[in-house]
Length: 177
Image (tube, rainbow, N blue to C red; front, side, top):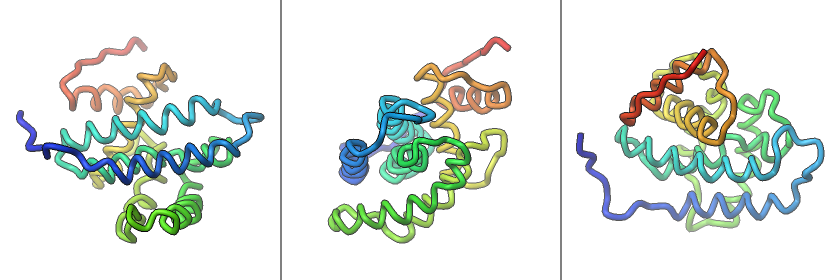
């Protein structure tokens, strides 16, 4: 099915946010992290691209999707700890995106976009639950795909989400369980 897409995607804000977190990463300790710094940075960038691709295929805004993909693990990136990272995300979003907005007024994230991000990011870890929010579903699917492509083990309860997410882009995936 053809997708009516713009000639050029708007990527400035997502790139600015990634740049903001890459600068912050210089101060992150590599010690006692649940995931390596490499993983946090690589997943931030590739999840943004996966979100952009899936958003295009679903008729959603690829720029806000990429921003969500870039920051969905914001609590893990900042604290180094993954436990309850999705639930802890809103506090980091308020603090860090407020700082980001103050430094990048011409590429700021609007209040309505912040509200969307704070609504969908806390849901992304619960891949077994299906939401009626297309952006929450997009984030869950993109995270499942991106983690799989990085070689992260897919838990049994996450298999249906991963298989359906790949199917949505025309890839039939069969996982051995």
